[in-house]
Length: 507
Image (cartoon, rainbow, N blue to C red):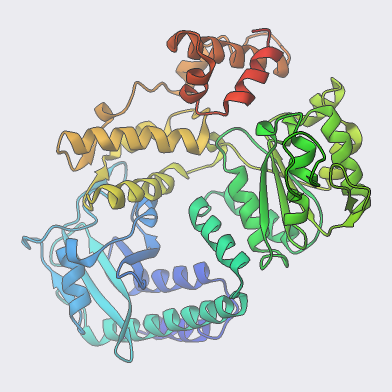
């Protein structure tokens, strides 16, 4: 081996006992491979308990790969690598389809792979992962020493084992045997994970880590569809209350007459229909976290009662004179500008300051630099799994189109748009999602040049938002013959919330 190779091997060995993050360890492994082997792209996969290969780091490949999982049985080359204990080479004439065709980065476009090589990673007799290397040039791997590759493979396998063992210890330490914890895990699974490699998402994760273990109230702000609820789940999962329940409250859906009962509970006979004692959301969240979603929609009368409970840490069920002490951490979320709401007397200033102890702003999708490819890969993977189409992928031109959009509905809008396009591609029996499969999309510049919502002269943000919401509601009602329930379904929102917003906007 060359001296540089020995130095890189030494660095990898030292990293086994270092305090580097998992991502940094993976990246140093890839960087080492890139310095020693003649490849234009490389990747490290871990083998999960469901039998899938999950990419954890890539060089020279589209970041969309990181959102995927690969089942070896439907990718012949990966299957061949997994089944072999020695390195496997595929020359340019190999008839087996390459899983990375279309993902290898060229100077200005995606190009196909021409030569590739891979090695399975084992600890004892257990498969823990795979290394792959790809090149634009044919025959470049013919002269690679198997001993060199196997040495790198052994060190990489040892690194994966260390990372896995540390993760297992952490998981065991967090493991709970209560029903509450089972419900919490189900909720986390339902809401997915935070996906993104942009500086904005790294900053968001760092902010979450900073405040998660405290008991401070957190106010999460951000546009619709940015993932505020997901941030709330991450905060609770990383907190010291993670073994206790996180109770969700949709403030926009609380009927004003029953909001106090929903939050604080009631006793039997407190009002018509109160046939039994009932615990409110605060009692259910005792010891854990109460997540107040869309908190800006709370009526003022409810805000006053909520403030009293937050300040004093005690409550009374409706119809009871007994005080109950609760220990609840508050996380709230809103897509409204609460400072403006306070200025216009629609939100209590004292409640705002109680909630805004530690503010977290979730970036819009258009602010997240370079995240659309990995998000597209992640979202498309759900479609592949749901419809059993493992080879469906998005064409580079279509991906470039997505990257040019403004996405006012953020990640939720991207997911819906990509899902519709994927269904059209599946229906037409295409393995590639093309630009033609998407609804008519405009670039941000097109929108700015044609939309009244991007004024040339200074205007109030609240006025513009109200005008946009008014136009949306009018459009939804016209599409649904004036029926509010159907308009709410059309806009994918709560009927009561839409009706109240409509009344506020003059409908």
